[in-house]
Amino acid sequence: MTTDDTPPAGPIQHVVHIRLDPSLDDGVRRSLEADLHRLVDEHPHALRASLHRDLGRRPNAPVSATWMVSMDFASMADFEAYLAHPTHRDFLQTHQPSMAYITAIQVPLEG
Image 1: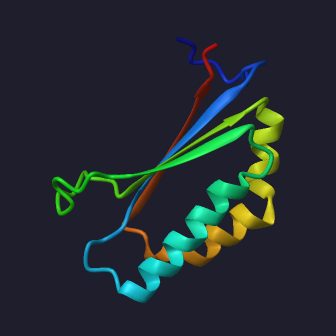
Image 2: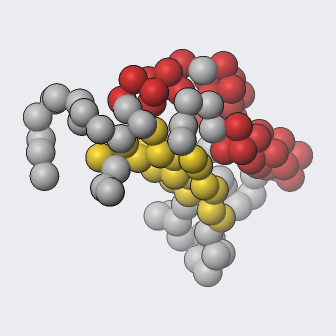
């Protein structure tokens, strides 16, 4: 494990957890989820992406996420291009205010 600021030379994985408040308005929820599916389906600059919904065993627990997104990028430059891409930027600008929380981590992609 490394803690320096040098970006990894190889591929990286970007993992995001999004929590939606269980009482979120259904129209807002449907719009967010449709746009999230579109973002993952298009996955600009990413090699591949997957979207997973929580099994719902404890949706009201404050530490439960509703969605997990995982995207693999060939390089840090590709990831940074994704961050600036209009599909990603517009998704966050439109929907982040209605999220209870969003967290992200980037790690070197093994193998």
